[in-house]
Image: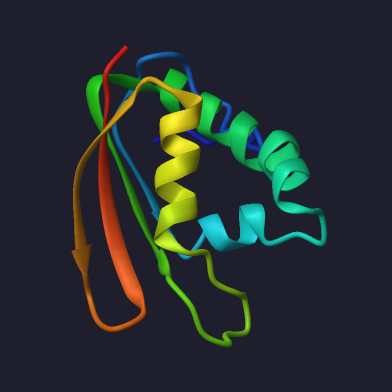
Length: 113
């Protein structure tokens, strides 16, 4: 086991060192800042996604589970935002989305490059 110092925008892992990354109720915190949507993407989401993409091995999976809507203590992020961000960042292929209930989704992405 190894301890790695991470920040909200850089996970601090070696390139191509992960088979999978799991984000459960994290993405809403990443983009749910007081910034406008574009600023939140540029300052928080894009650097984090690039860091995760770099750490994943080719073919590695990123799993995102979050909340579509509703009033929750830590906020929510619509599925369409997650899909748009992963498409925009590049290097990921959307594999599947499953709805866990009315508000919770689970998306699987594969690192392509």
